[in-house]
Length: 486
Ligand SMILES: *Cc1c(COP(=O)(O)O)cnc(C)c1O
Image 1 (cartoon, rainbow, N blue to C red):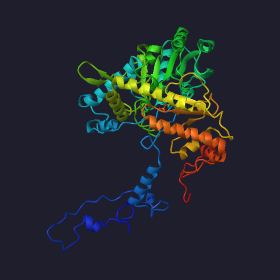
Image 2: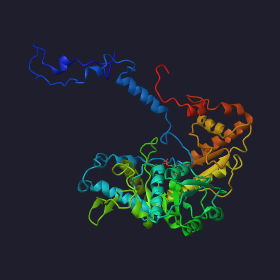
Image 3: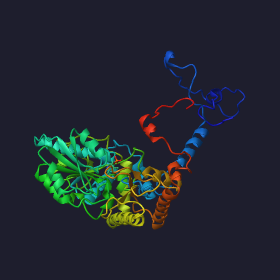
Image 4: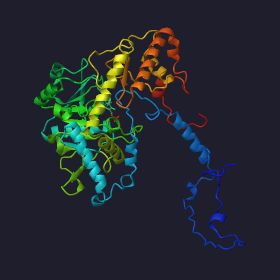
């Protein structure tokens, strides 16, 4: 019999709430006024039907067991390219749990919230310094929402000058959120071809009076630094456009180069990538946006100000694009990112970027000749291979599935789209040489299996709880409702 639980145990009201035992000695209980339900009778069920009947302990065990099936950066190496799955230091969590920061109500008056406001202000300043921008908003809740905020700022700037430009240039290596954002902001997307990196000629050929902005990622999703970026920004500006930078790959640049100095006008940061905060299943992310002085009036508001004595919430700017989030955004994530920046320091952040780049080039060097390298120039923080040289009719998907058998989370695959059969590996600075060597050994062993035992790769994963799924059907016909007996 279950003796704890929400449905298993029916409380004996008489015993608990009423002094109904005339034989009781010593204590007497006053009669409690237990509220009774006053729902209209026709709305009340006579009996509960169809709900699973489980006790609390059964539910806790079920979810605890499921959580151990999960794979996260705390359980193993996670080379998911473009996502920067670096280790999240536990000191960030300690800081985020400081009661004064964790439990403060977002509507607390400024004079009682000086600590939180100071932390947000200092984070704005730190991000501005790292990136070379004049101002930073912390509001957006994800990189993608930062893109939207940034592109709305660019649109507001154009509209303020009476410009009716309708197009945005986006290179073919871009992450899917870039064209989605341009489209959400009301622009038509003009894809431009790159050969690894953007050339000035290609941008020039497309840059005309209809183009509001160029959206560029630097380093790009091939892990290559956009070497022509300064000249490209100059050209776009001369022709009346703005340059948006997708900052998802900032982990390659911290302390080394600043997008603001390259001529970029707007950039988002992904705190859950570069600044070691959790990637929360699409949940508690944070995508601050930095802008040049010229674009400051259009930033979403309100931000945090310092008047020389105390911290306060800015007055709404007349030309602001408005709010992106309720209150200040995901403050708990900001605390973690700030803890990371302060514990690393300027030199530590630079060292992190250098090690991220070194690790990518180490793996590149170890796997060169085993897997095809579509681009020969040196990598920054991530490295792209392809399945071109794999034997036994084996493809990128087979390699990714087989890595699960070796205990690794698969890398990003089939992205960027410009590389056929792309295998996109991002190591980050937080992995040791031993981890990288074991991973490379597994990748080399898998290439050998493709040659000697291709059927094994086609069947993989064979050691996981669930074997290869029909991902196409799962994506096309998702089951989104609980079905009895399913
Ligand atoms: C992750 C990523 C994004 C989107 O960021 P989210 O924080 O996931 O919304 C955009 N562009 C690139 C290149 C990325 O890697």
